Image (spheres, rainbow, N blue to C red):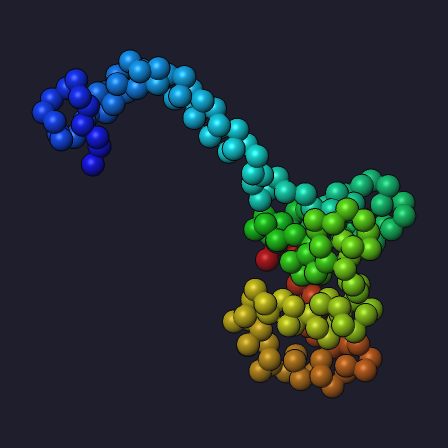
Length: 174
């Protein structure tokens, strides 16, 4: 219920939009209206959208100098750039962990990220569980498959079929 304007209509009668605006303008409300509008616009611009937030993974791994320092990571990043994962807004930390808000390498990586560390989310044996965090139905089917049994049998040799055996890590098409 809007307030009743003293100059218009019966006391206690709801005021119309035009009456409210006329009332504010007539009482110096233009300045208040401009001030409030300006503050709202400024506040709206201070909160970055998800797409605008810093991602040190992307900042570092998109550096062309990485091609010389670590061609494998450079190529991996290039594949991610055109992948469905990127299109769906899944960045490096979604699978690898780490802290994309961090500015320095140690803090950004936040622990073992490569596939050589057994505790890494992308270690060969952990891949089904890592992928299964988003692809739960496929993970359940995989767990019952001959592929999962073969991975378990060959775990010491770090062999056997897992998700990336057929789909690669950042499969560009699926």
